[in-house]
Every structure is written in C-alpha cells, then in structure tokens.
Length: 461
Image (cartoon, rainbow, N blue to C red; front, side):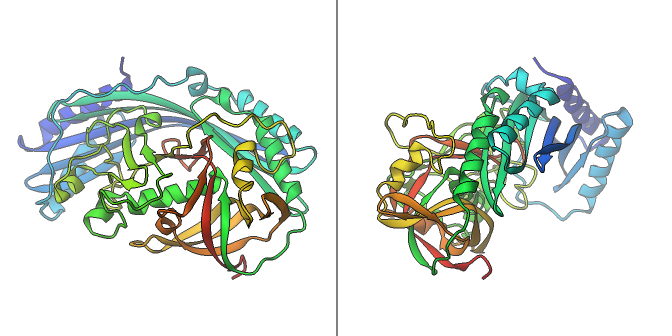
C-alpha cells in the first residue's frame, strides 16, 4: 500500500529525467503531516488548531555540483518549478567532490503499523484528556497541551529506489501551579489511548504543592536523582553533539568507538523505526535500531552517506534535511532500564515521586531530586560541557527521604563525565518517553541516580 506521496515523488523523479542532464542524480522525499494541537491555560482550553501540510525535498547532483530545493506545491506547475529552481541552484553551487552517490534499489524494513485512532483523533478526544488533567489538579491553575500527529512519507531516487510509510504520535505536557511554584508532567506515546490525563494532572499538582516555600542551597557538587524529563536533556545533548557523525568526523565529539566511556549501567539504543513511518532516511538508506552504547562501551555514532564516506564507515540511515549542515544524529534514543520487575504502580495521588524513583532516592544519604532541566547550552562540544537550569521541581534528599523543596539552581557539567564508569549509582526500571518539539523526535528514559552534579549557583546567576 502507498499513497499520494509516492505518486508525487515519482512525478518529481520523472521531471528530473526530462529537464536535467541524463547523467543527473536526484533523490526526493515527500512528507504529508496532519498535526492537531489542543492548548490550555488558566485551566481552560484556549486554542484548538489543526493543519495538514505537504513538504517536498529534492536533492539534485549534476555536472559535479549538488543543490537542494524544497517546496509544498503539488500541482504539475509547482513540481516543475521546484525541479527547475533546483537545477539553477546546482549550476551556481561550487563543485562537490564528496558527493556520495545514490542508494540503489534495496529491500526496506517494515515499519510498525500506526494506531489509526491516534492518526485520526478528534478534538474532543484531546479535550477529554485536558479536562481530566485540570480536574485532577484539584483547583490549581494549569496550562499545557495535548497533541496528535499523523505522517505519511515517500522516497524515490533516479536509481529506481522507492519507499513509503506512515506513523502516528500523541503527547501531553502540562503544569500545575501552587504558590508560584510549577509542577510538571509530560509523556509521549504511539497511541492517544495511552495518555492518562488524570494521572498526569495528579502528578503535576502533587509536585507543585510539594514545591511551595523552597529553601536556597549553596552551590557545590551534589549527588542527584534525575527524573526521566531531566534525563531526556542528557540524551538529547549526547545525541546531537556526541553521537553526531559529522562532529565525530571533524573530531569535535567525545565519542571513542570501542572505549568504555560510560558506566556499565548505561546502555543507549537509537530506535528510529519507532518514531518514523518511513523505513528509510532522506537518502534512501534503510533505518534500523542502532546500539550506541552497550554496558558502558561506545559502539557507534550515526552517519549519513557523506559522513560515512569521510570516515570509512557505512551509513546508519540517519540522513535528514539538516544532516548536511548540522550533521546526522539520533533522534529517538532510549536509555535502557535496569533488569527486573517494575515497581508497583503509584496509588498516592499527591506523591512527589513514583515507586521507581523512590527506590533510587532511598539510597541517597544527602542529595537532590531534580525533575527537569532547561535552557541548556553547550560550552565545550568536545567535552560536552553544558550549562543550564533546573525547573519544575527540585527537592533535598536526606537519609533516603525527600524532605524539602529547593530553589532552582544553575549548573555547569560535562555530561559524559556524569555518566562515566563508577558515576552511575542506579538506573530505574520504567522508561518514560519524553516528547520533543516534533513528533519524530523523542527521548525515553527511566530515572537515574548519579554520584555528583556540579551546581554553580542559584537560578539568578
């Protein structure tokens, strides 16, 4: 089965054959996205928006030069204009001796079948989850969103390679506010049915109430327990700057293949087929699960065809619209949880931590429980030293018990060092998928206990 996207991709390839030099090479990706968002503030829905967009991306190599064009017009005139414009751009580009060529026709893996109920969710289904979130907050002021997304994409190139696929995603992210303090809960899933607005609202409210009247702590190195949302920031920065094939090729990455750079408790897996219905990347290379770190040992970085050629490796299927400039990086990284049965479900509506996090907290003599990180900026890409702030809840841990809320703190920390051998004191068993800005990017992690984190001062400086 394929859709209109396949037809459009074929038309673009045909136009290249008619309008360009016979030796020209081209690849095209056509993506149709149906996205819907229900937003709420002051505990009321104030916006429900939906959009359906088509994006056409053409990369063309002719006479030793490469150019990329994009558009959204699917009419015959619109597609012709895209090809003609890209041809003109190619003639103006400098020579491209690093052109890696096209992927020949090859088998492609089967992507998971998307949930149809999520793909075609109605506004009242998202609104019901918002209502449950607001009601569960027990009168606290709330804000956030619930979104659903459906994507269908097709790939084709002038070598005769084609692919098509679909995906669906749902996500909810909300806060509850008590006494000027925000508590947060967020989750992404393949199915809208897996988002429990009441459970998320209760968790956000419990954190907000538990964060009132925070104390201020001096800067220093503290043992920490990170909630999954905070761990997601570690994964995102490790992915973008560490496991990035371009950064690796330019020796700007910390990654050393085959080296035990992380604690043995750390295993990271990129799982792109779980987030993208298209079974190939924008160059036509098949996507597949890629172990980045196994029991502490760095095993791979991600490549598109260009960075693979530069390093003598093979493409890992991570070509994207921005990989030629920023570099190919994994967008669906899982930190694998510890082995063993998951803790029993949390039945305390106002609990600050769930049982999985509580099991890690119990081992801390004195440290901090951190819910979320934000405004993180890379200071040193090679060491991946990052500065940023905590938000949405920090609590002091004393003798294995969460005792009092703490004001937000600024930190400066080398992320790989925080996960180095001996630095990871515990990994939870239940991974929670954290949404990113787009449906095809997410980070999945259990809570994490780290030996130390370098806090440099309060949120004001």
